[in-house]
Amino acid sequence: MTYTYKLLGNHTGPGIPANTPIDYVLRKEDNLMIPKDKANTDYQEYLAWVAEGNTAEEAD
Amino acid sequence: MSTLKVDGIRSNSATSDAITLASDGTCTANITNNLSNRNIIINGAMQVAQRGTSTTTNGYLIDRFRSNLGGLDQFAFTMSQSSDAPTGFRRSLKFDVTTAETGGIGSDEYAGLRYIIEAQDVAHLLHGTSAAKTFTLSFYAKAYQTGTYAVNFYVGDSARIYNATYTINQSATWEKKTITVVGDTGGSGINLDNGHGIYINWFLGSGTDYTSSSSALNQWSNYQDASWAHGQVVDITSSTNNYFQLTGVQLEVGSVATDFEHRPFGQELALCQRYCYNHEIQGSIGPYAMQYEASHKFVHDFFPVTMRAQPSYTITYNTSSPTPYYPSSTHFKAYVNSAYNATSTIYMSSAIYFAEL
Image 1: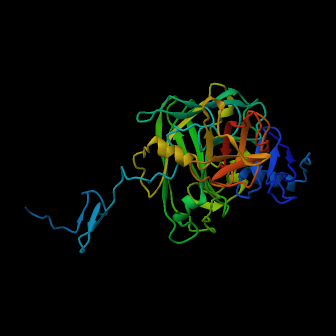
Image 2: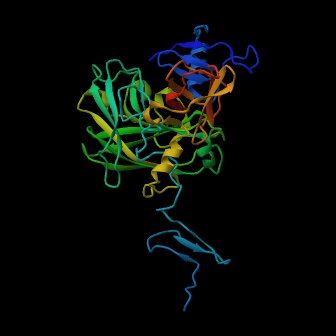
Image 3: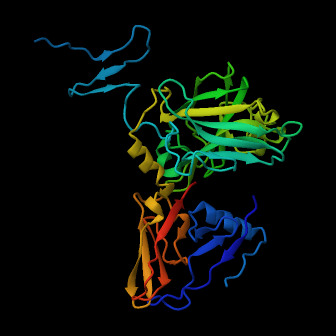
């Protein structure tokens, strides 16, 4: 199965510095939330997908 | 009272002592059964299945074990946790063909099962040094097809591979198989980290692109595609009659396959939860979002064990989804816009976390 991804933008919660990015990407087909942790194998797959020239959907 | 004074005890037919006694009053013994914590494999008896008990999708089902398919077209299967098991076990992983690959497996296709050991759990094998340790894999297999099956051990950190084969002698019959692997003194070894250590691949079918290696079996070599499934003869994809079952998987240091180490279920589950944690929420009402300032709530979910890495997750809530904040390998937390005097509550309905290799 080929997955596609979506970025999640910045935090908006009080007490959180402005413009702090949400540390996850969304895998759209199964709604899997993936942390931006290079030890996470789902994130490794996302990085490989980007390295192939793909681009994640921008945040809302 | 009398004392037996000897320096060693050995079998009449052995070439080394089973027990060696030292002058300081201690001894060393080559005990081959019932030692604890010798099985490096987690969930080798296939008892923990947090994701469910049946799937038709390539990937994980029974904890720590996954299917591994490449390039197949028409092929379809059901992978399940089966209650059919050899004496001494109660569960097995069953991989059952439901749609055959038209014309059999193609040159660039393969099918199999996979287990990946975390690197820091096998770093003590000292691969890449002259002190590299021999280890032994044992397992029980049952298959419709008799014949030759391949297993490989792949070390990603150093791109080294060891190919071996075993034979299923009788159809539909549980058989115990043992493969002893001499330690790899070549290559750069295995890193001491939380990444991929040793892949164990049980092949069930493979095209010639992955079997055409001219290298000898039962030795370490640098990885090449042609050695990926070197030695595989059986093609499970050829018919819907075919199936393969696996249980009692054990990998241990040394050249002897000892009795399978049955661990308590709770201990096995905790070991699995380092890689997958299904928070079983009673009645679909889980951790509540709690107020942390006038207009926002935070929800926390603490993991029972530290996960291997920051986990991916699928979480459902009774209402709008909170935003995850500062991921961790020990807990999940997220915030949501909700006033302190809101009349409705917000809580998790389900949560499953993945930090697999």
